[in-house]
Length: 396
Image (cartoon, rainbow, N blue to C red; front, top):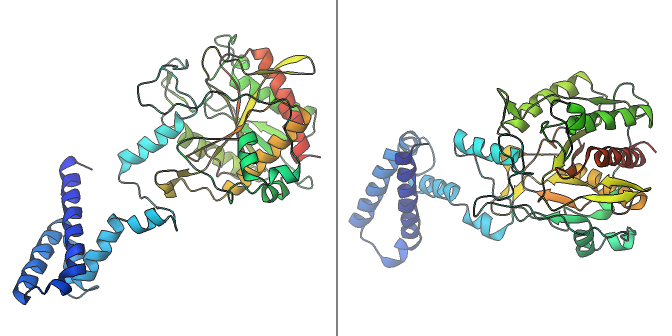
């Protein structure tokens, strides 16, 4: 959208606002018929210049009366009543391809910012949105039904809500989320779990260059091996690369590219019920996400949910996810299982604005496992604990 057209639209919106005020009060101030005809002619003429076809159609009797048409256009431009009352979501349309691409790129880079070599950028530009530092994980939390139905307790002990989004008690009804059935169907044949990586280039403190087995790809392969061989959950590991462009780091279209390929895999394997996008987080250089499990140093993990909603504008229609409730149920059930099996293993579930391809299946998980400050051994230990938690939730 060029600048001239944008200015034209802004000016027309101002004219419409004036016209709406005029229409609301002109009956009370007693304007003459000549003055009213002049004003109508003025607004009709300028509206035709900006919205020629639609307005002429209305003017010539092909639609609602011109006054009604103008008012309806203004309401579509300025949905203030809906926004202020919050009785319905503000359903923002994508202005143009540039805006849409910007939103998708922001989503793609959103978990952590990296440079062209995949290294974490710790000092972001002023004003940039920074994810909060990892919270202190208590050794044990009360997972009783009585406690979990308390919204404030649930939020404080199990969630971190990013400043860009919002949640309500209706979103996080623990009783409802914990009673959803997340078990896999053992009667059907074929793979039940798909593991893939939107950000395949993420590595660790002692990863070795040129050895994918020491990166997040290797962790996905190990998790797949554990699920297949130790727990009898047939699992596919997809090692497609979506964050490189001609050998250079480029995450701008990672989620779009991954969505297309993962959708093909799901179509080819309709037995798949669980989709896991496995990442590693990015934290400050002094932060070490580690806990002790059975005497082994183990990287902590975090479940990450997209709400397809911003606090400023409401639901994001073009990033619609019909499975948000199922996604939330799955991550909470995994969180509770982990709290019982391995206290301190999971960080708080992180809730943020966008979708992150969690719309591909009801039982979809985005997992941030460890960070760039963890070792490969700590990560492999984390995969062993994660496999056990998953088995507890879906296979028992």
